[in-house]
Image (tube, rainbow, N blue to C red):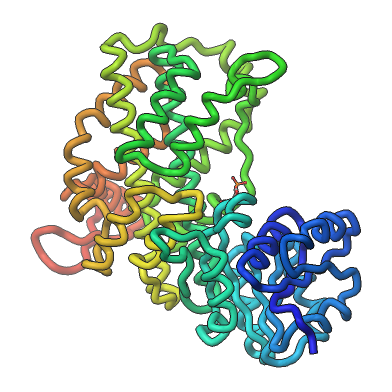
Length: 467
Ligand code: 6PG
C-alpha cells in the first residue's frame, strides 16, 4: 500500500508550488515528471514536508494511497496523452484531477469517457498564478460530487482564505469548473484592457509620469477600485529598470500575448448569444497590439488630433478612475450573465453567489466589490444583470457623467479606448427600451423575405418592399 496522499504529475513551477502548499498543510505528495531537472528542483523542497519525486511511473503510482488522487499539471495540449498513458495502470475508483487551463469542452469529453470507464475525474480551474499556487489559490473544481468529496479537504486546506473562509467550492458537473475558470479569465482580460486604457488616457492625455500613475493606482486601490489587478498596476509603475533607471513599463514592448482563454470566452458568448462587449474588446485589443510593425507604418501615414486634455488635470484623474470602475463592473456583469446562460444551456446549476465568494481571494480578479456581488446574488440568484442591483445601480448612476466625459475626451484626443467605449455601448444598449433593430428586421425582410414582427399586433409579417 502506498503512503502518499496526493500524486502530482508535472513538476513545473505551478505543480511544485501546489505540492509545497499541500505539504505545508500536512498532505504528503509524490511527484512525477520525465524531466530530471524538474525532479531535482522538486526534491530540494523535501525539507518543507513529506514530498518525493519519482522518475518511474509504476513506482509513482505504487507510492500513492488508494483510491489514488492524482493531479495533472501539464500543458493543456498533452492532457489527453497524460490521461491515456496513466489510465491502463489505474484502478476503478481512482481520481484524476486536471488542474490546467483546459478548454471546458475537452473537460466535458474527458469527464464522460473516464466516468463511463469507472474512474473519477475532476476538471478544475485554479487562479492566482505561481505565487497563488504556493500561498493560496482560488480553486474551481467541476465533476461528480462524490469525486470532489475525495479531494475537498485537501483543496480547502490549500485554498486562499478570506476571513477564514476557503476560496474553493464545488462548481458543478463535467466541465463546469473549467467553464467558470474560462469566464474568470474573460473578465480578467476585460479588466486588464480597461486598466491599460486608463493608463493610456493619463499618459497621453495629461502626460502623467510613472510616479504619478503609481501614486494614483495606490490611492485607487484603497477605495472602491480595491483589487489585485489595480494593486499590481501601482507596483508596476513604481518599478525602475536597474540598467537604465527608466520606469520599466516604458521599455516593455507593447504587444500583448494571449494563451486563448479570453478568446474562448468571447467565442462561447457568441455561441450562447450573450453580449460581452467589454471582453470582446479586450480580446481585440490584444490582437491589434500584435500588429506592431503595421502600426508603426500607419502612424507615419495618418495624422490625428494634436494636443492632450485641455481641462483640469486633477479632475481628469478622478473621471478616469470613475470610468475605470464602472467599466470594470460591466466586465464582471457580462461574465456573470454568461455564466447564468451557460448554467441553463449546459445544466451546470451554477451558484453565482458562491462563485463570487471564492473569487474574493486568491484569484487574479479578486476585488473588494466581489463581497457585494456575493450578497446581491445570495438575495437574488436569478438577477438578470449585476448592474440592476444596489449598490451597483447607484454606483453606475453616480459615475455616468464622468464615464461619458472620459470617452468623449478620448475620442477628441484620438486615444483608443475600445474597452471603456464598448462598456458604455453595452450599458446604453441595455438601458434602451428601443433599439434600431426594427430597421435591421426591415432590411432582412426586404432582401431575404425573413419576415418581422410588429409592435402593434401579434403575428409574423412580410412586406413586398419592391412591389
Ligand atoms: C490565473 C491566470 C492564469 C494565466 C492566464 C494568462 O487566473 O491565474 O488567468 O490562468 O496567467 O492563463 O492568460 P493569457 O496568457 O491568455 O493572458
